[in-house]
Image (cartoon, rainbow, N blue to C red; front, side):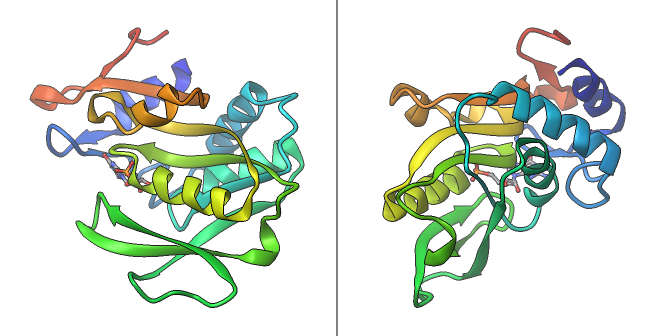
Length: 193
Ligand code: 5GP
């Protein structure tokens, strides 16, 4: 998505070889019109896939998950976070290692919101090492629901988080796949195209 890549180049800040800050429009301040554009793009890529629910994790995935669900006209669920190892009764639950907080956190979704009949699209702001994704896939598996695919805004492809799922045949769409952040520069796979 060319407009997104240009926005990342203009507004993003490379904090290290592995961390990109895009808090002016994605995960601190949110640009609602732009979030809608990204939601339209992700929804378009999964149109016709029979999605019944969109799943994300609080908090930074919610904006784009919401606009994707708005366009697909399906409910949006955000997994809630809590201290790891404390199981929430009546919920599906996974433990994940948080890339940004450098600690284990638990994520959970109330059982009433995902059933065997659901076809779930996972949406998130970033795909890095794939821990958040692994946790959400675990929740979908516990529910016996179908994983339709994954849509992320920015995938840092060099961190390999999408590899295992792609090898299993799961479709992962990234609006801005990043090849490298080395030397303080964002390099996209396929440049701006
Ligand atoms: P993963 O679990 O794939 O390693 O990391 C995914 C989560 O970590 C995302 O939901 C996002 O909130 C956060 N994250 C990962 N990499 C970055 C980054 O470079 N910048 C920011 N702002 N958040 C990130």
